[in-house]
Amino acid sequence: MTIFARDLSVAHYRSFDSYRLALDEGVTILAGPNAAGKTNLIEALQLLTSGASFRHPTAAELVHDGVGSCKVELRLEGDGRVLDMGLSAEDGKRSFSRNGKRCSAADVRGVLPSVLFCPDHLDMVKRGASVRRAALDDFGMQLSARYADLASTYGRCVTQRNALLKETWCCREMLGAWNDSIARAGSALLVHRLALLDRLAGHVHTAYGQVASGEAANVTYASTLGDLPQVEDREELKGWAYERMLAALDEHADEEIRRGVTLVGPHRDEIEFTVAGRSARSFASQGQQRTLVLSWKVAEVAVARDVLGTAPLLLLDDVMSELDGERRGAFLRLIGDDIQTVITTTNLGYFTDDLLDRAKVVSMGETC
Image (tube, rainbow, N blue to C red; front, side, top):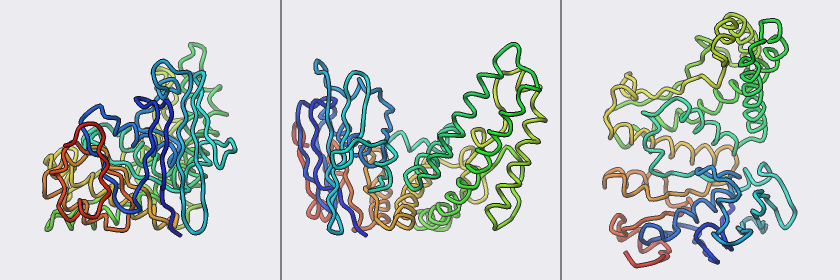
């Protein structure tokens, strides 16, 4: 199954009054100066493939200044099908549509998955654990509606339990029902995370080794529940996690009441990168950390194709300027020629003549 993003059009969206972008099935390069609107188009593509934006905007922020509403439309084509994805924002609310019928963000996800790579991602290894958890969950939500439901349910459980813990009258007896709910959602989410990370880890290891020959990189999951049992059966693992989480919540109840926050569960877990057996966050050089992130993005592309049976749309937002020539070349080689890719840049000099000959180059603003 092959699906392509064919045509993007926006009206009164962000910096645009009106704009239409016809996309190549291979590489489309959006070239122009800063503030030309390139990142806005990347965001529009992400919104209509993943149902979310890396900027986390309000609906009002999507609308062009001085206008009451905006509309974004993306045509997808492949295997004899045509799908029109839409997004509108008005009166502080946004809504999605599919072939003209209103739908949820969940109905947008997974048709044509997207993998975004922007400069902020280059710090993923050295930033806090929440950044790495979000990277895993955001990707998982595109691949599986069940994953998305679990992540949403667990997030609500944590928020509501934390609200209870902050009340001055909260006591152990009041936590019982919440403990069961959060343990059920948390244990199921943990199993899904581990399965997805297991898929990603092999690709990360392989890609890193191809860029940095002679070095071995790995990515592992560290749970607040302790060492995870080595079992193959997912239901057995979920049962263990449920019981262990109930016990851990009971064990930490007094401290949680005192601090007003839930201290154990997937929302406190860590995803750890290592290079040559040492913590990449603590010991890896900037170059090694960036190679790890490159490898993670290569892994996302590979896993999306494996799981959904279609290559994702790869969105590279001004990331080439942050990489040296060796890593730019290595990343593009690892991705391959059969991935539809949209790249933004202020400088066409970052690209080889071969790539420029194959790509569709769209000039936005002044030439570069």
